[in-house]
Image 1: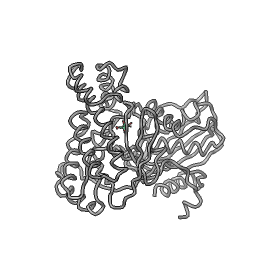
Image 2: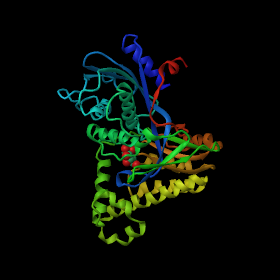
Image 3: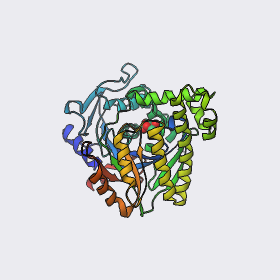
Image 4: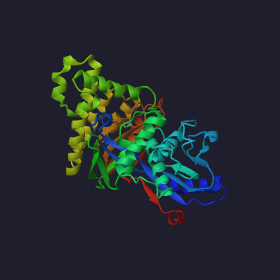
Length: 402
Ligand code: GLA
């Protein structure tokens, strides 16, 4: 769907000409392990079967033109034009904001050395924007995959880890979000039929199969807008630094080496209750994430669901990144027979919940939520997703004919 939309947009914007290259990257849903990645902890996301697609071709001259099909973007902002990156015209942050994800990747891909030709590109996506499903990493990683295909002789050729880190850098420097590595890693390395437990310290992933047709991953979008570049996300990152330092660690990454007993025993060392709660969340969430990955390996959905519920409570009470709509959606989901567990997913303050549910109970879960959810909030929407594939190039001729 996204591919067809991108190709159609390309043709209409660029005088009926054909794109030569297409690449895509998925959004993600994090099953468990939230706000742990920037503390060197564990996360357990899966790639969605929803993707962002970039299609395009190299052109003569110096002018890059990118057009987006995203309906949330104002028409005047849907097209951006800028000089191709060279030492004398390095790529700069600019309006509109969405294009900074692409500009950032463009700048870091080649360090503005001038090896990227001018290009025309069109972008379309099926990843909901601003919903905590990592639409930004999908755009960054899709842009990277596109540039990689556009410049096949570009050096250095990078490993998957390096690609992900480079896209993360682009997000830090061009979008101003001090995010961890989860979103870019899963967007690069997701494998169909698998969730990926990532150790954010070693930056190694452990694939866990998730193909049992009797269970479904249900995503519920609260349509409460989530805006990570606001102050709350960076504040949590800093609070984790403070909490770790109070316990004698150099920075937040030291939280990875602690057990819940250590945090409890050292309670008097924290500056305040808030620091204690932040540390408690990160440390307990790491333990839950490891336990959950093992539970999924064994097909123990009951335990997995229980850990999801506990994760949500910890994010709500100790890390304080949930909101009333996410709390209500998870509570309602848990009332349904056949639901194993439900939690907020992603950065929080809105966005989506993720629910692990028996496939036979998916319909009932949606109906129950819609019936009981307060009308004063935006009406939630639902979709299910199998674990999708990480970034890849799409063969255009065949795909467009399909
Ligand atoms: C956002 C960030 C991630 C991660 C999550 C919370 O999605 O981009 O790096 O920190 O929030 O788990």
